[in-house]
Length: 221
Ligand code: ADP
Image (cartoon, rainbow, N blue to C red; front, side):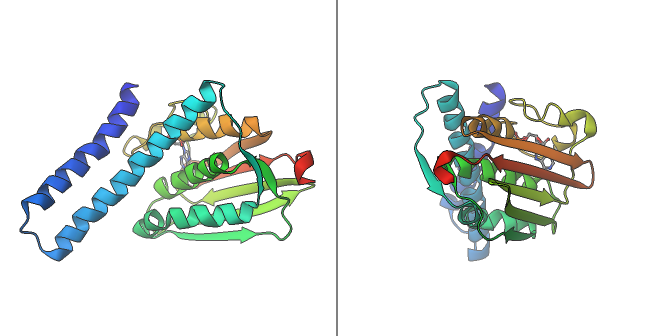
């Protein structure tokens, strides 16, 4: 709770600081835009964290009402890319997606699966130094659809990989980055409900590859 509160307080403090400064007035347009950009991106970061926490508590309480529907993974990936366009541009990353034809549709809670993809993609953007390369593959094996997100970022130390899906766990090489260690454990929790799986393969200093597989359900056959 202390860690998460800290994560909420940090962006709030900078939002308040920049808003107060803007209210004092007297800044040129370029500076004002710079401040507004900080306010916008910090607010989005907070909103994402709060949504993650709410989703986590929804899954924890076991009262989760599933709103299942059939949807296309390629469309979902495209939407996630659009939602993170500002963050991608800010870091100068090149993000390419490759979507195979005829990927079986997925039957699950679309918003929650979107959270999974947003979390994985946010990590790739965050943990890859400027001007990195992120590749997203959407395809299928037999009838199981998959998404693979690959980045050429800082990677995960070998000793940390086995703990990476534990709540609040963060690897030793990410201390200088904001984060709370919720995204991956939440993603695993969500996928379990829909018979999905998530796995991670990484080499420190070289790459990280996250694979999400959706077992085909009777609805999607
Ligand atoms: P957060 O990113 O907020 O710390 P996550 O649960 O999403 O939390 O990720 C847990 C940890 O896994 C991260 O702190 C980081 O150490 C590691 N990690 C996840 N994705 C990547 C990635 N693409 N590159 C490097 N490390 C990653």
